[in-house]
Image 1 (cartoon, rainbow, N blue to C red):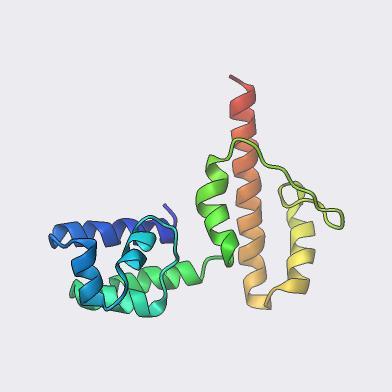
Image 2 (image 1 turned 90 degrees about the vertical axis):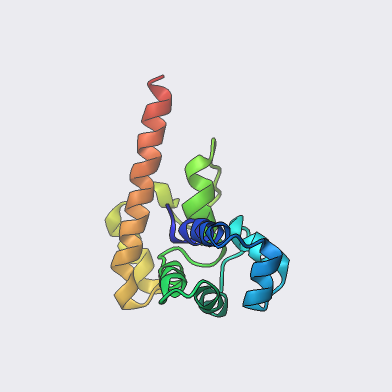
Length: 149
């Protein structure tokens, strides 16, 4: 489960365990009820302030802040985090048009290293290469599984 999905699941679990409605929790956290709903459904990424408020509301010692940090340190960035962690693994077909680069799923680790070393902080390059390699392995495994049926 991705850190973002874990955050959503844990938020709903703690809310129900405390017998709170989304309205009651939003009042405790001083945020809009729709934000609680969007985070629980994975439609919005929580902020640090939201995570801190959740920890206060449930009297937890940094549980949601820890999950927030995992989300923010994910090698996938921005909108791509949800794509890579939640949408792509369930995709039936992937289409890509990359006229200037070898598409990510076809990149060798060496090629990915060369690309990421020009666009990423030096301390993040290896993490991103490993993430790309894992995605490629997942895609190959899924393709073999579908073709063998």
